Image (cartoon, rainbow, N blue to C red; front, side, top):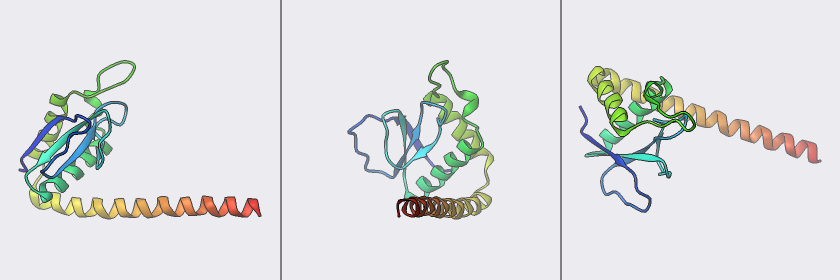
Length: 134
């Protein structure tokens, strides 16, 4: 089980250990991010492999809407740091190391495919604009 620490991110703070950020406000609460934003938690780990595994675990929890159960607030929904930690710890207890590493590799491939499709859509849009302007 990877060791991790979750804290509230303060803007301007630098981290020496492998880390990533989790959005904590809005309907995308729980979404892992590589770059910080004003409303996020930071998860620090002991190694790059643990960081990568936890990043994709949080991504799968976000896609599976596991964080949405814990959203609070009527105008701007948010998730508490204790609830985020609880969701991640439960997922870590339920996952098996061998199967999880296979899922992480598949998630990487799916994300690369999604980025490729987004680039293709952007190129098609530029082609449409160029066609209409000529």
